[in-house]
Amino acid sequence: LLLSYPMILKLELRFVESAVTNNGISTLANGIARHATVQHLILALNSTSVSDDGVQALVDAFSKCPKLSQIDFGLSNCRAVTDKSAFNLAKLIKAQTLLTDIILRFGRTRLTTEGKASIQEVKNSRTFKRYEVL
Image 1 (cartoon, rainbow, N blue to C red):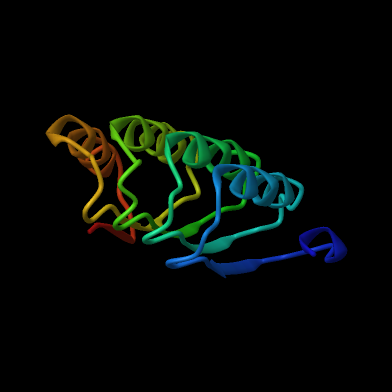
Image 2: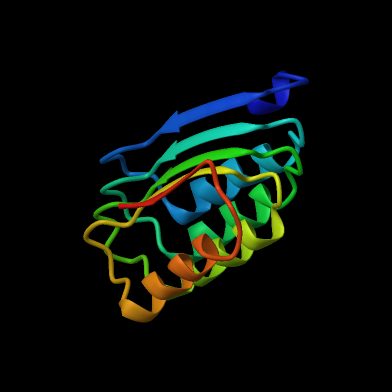
């Protein structure tokens, strides 16, 4: 479906409490990566079985969207998400200099203090319009 649209500026996808798998997320990530025009992304994967591998596929896709300026990424209650996801998201945010409006939702995941610190470190590295980690 994503491939049928030549230009997408705002993309909002919600898979909350769904049976989406890492394979499904990888397919979705491939579709997102082909739309370098995406500027605003809302992706809710709360209470799904997505793990670090699925998050990595999405981070790789987001990195191919150079105009991405706003991201609202929900991973709350994804028990398979660990510090690895936080580290990968931190690298993405550092690399994407146009990203100025960020909301990351990590409630009830397996993130430790170290993972949360990597996200906080990015927040302190430059000025953001909005940077929330929930």
